[in-house]
Image 1 (cartoon, helix red, strand yellow):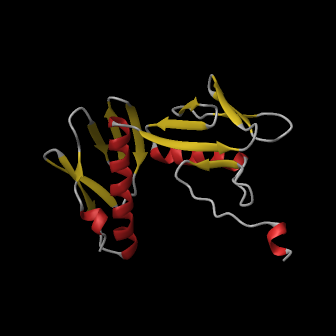
Image 2: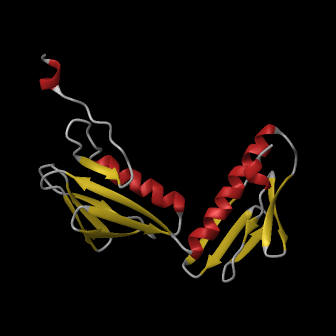
Length: 180
């Protein structure tokens, strides 16, 4: 039994949730998000909350009920507050700067890498080493952050590269430590 799928989805004031069959649209102060949900899952209104309703009780449907509840809740939180991801750039001469809808990354290659930010994702750079990404869609934000990190993933010897701000990189000793 899905414990997450059984929890009600609170809808705060200022956020409007429209359900049309398997199509869900959430409108809030920060924007609008839309998503199609699985046909075996439904949403039912109960006052200012919504409850995920399963059409049958198969294992697959129970799993999708928890997923659907989390996706819809993330849509509601996104249009109300938004989401943020922080990246840290480490290395001598490594830096980033925002130019319009592009993020220019100087991360040790012969030419800077121009990363096109998707529509809806905004970036802000402070101290040329810390990148903050903002978006109302949590899925798009995570995907964008992963693509930026993949430009120069952190390496374990010196720790150079692009990493999440809260990420820990396990360091290795290197050649000189193994010669003893």
